Figure (cartoon, rainbow, N blue to C red):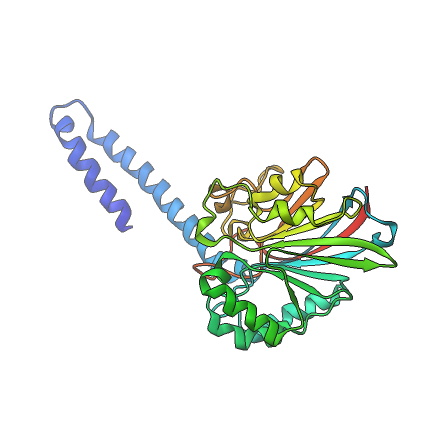
Length: 314
C-alpha cells in the first residue's frame, strides 16, 4: 500500500502540469494510477509469497537424483559401479549435526561403491571438530574421496585437511590421483584443489590438471573431482570421462521451469555450467545443487541434492 501511494504521489507530481493545461483528463490519470497500483500490489504479493515458500518449504526440499553415465573404455568389472556425489555441505550455522547425520544415513542407504564430496564442507575451521566426526559415518566399498572448495580454502585449507585426516578415514585429494581396483581392472580419480580467490570468473583451466592427467595410464579411464565446474572443457580435452562438481548450489534461487525450458537461476550469472548434466565429446559433467546454503537459508525451485551415478561402458 505504501509503495502504491508513493507511485500515486509521483504520478501526480509529473502529471499535474499537463492536467492543469487540459492536456490530460483527470480521469485518465486516475485510471492509469489504479492499473499501476494493481500491478505493484500483485508483484509484491507474488515476491513475498515466493520468499515465504523459499524460507520454509523450499529450503527443506531434497532430491536424490539417479543418473547412468556411459564411460568410453570403462572396464567390464566397473559396469554398474555406483558413485554417490555430494557437495557444498557448509556444515555449521545452517547444517547442524542432527541434519548432517540424516544426510549420512541417506547416502549410506544408496549402498555406494564410492562416495565423492566436491568441496565446501565448512565455512569456518572451528566447525570441523563437531561436523567431521558425524560425516565420518559415510560408508562405501571403496571409500570416500574429498576435494576442497573455495569456502574450505577461505576457512584455511591446511586446517580443514588436517581435521579431515584426524576425524575421518577419508582420502583428501589435493591435486592428487588415486586408482581404484576392481577384479584387477583400474579406474583413476583426479582431485584438484580450488584456487580460491585466484579462480575468477572466466578462468576455464586448472594448472594442476595437465600434470595430473599425464600420471594416468592411457589405458585407464579417469574421473575428475573439481569443486568448480568451469574447468570441464579443459578436463575433457585432457581425456577425463566424467567430472563431478558443485559450487553453484544450482543457483539456490531459481524461476520455476516453464514448458520444459532450462531452469533460470542465479548461478547463470557466474558460470555456463550452472546445474545438472553437460556433455563435451565423450566427457560428462555433473554439477550438484549441493546440500547447504550460502548467505541465507533459502532455496527456491532448487532442491538440495544427493546424486547417485551409475557407470556403464560406452
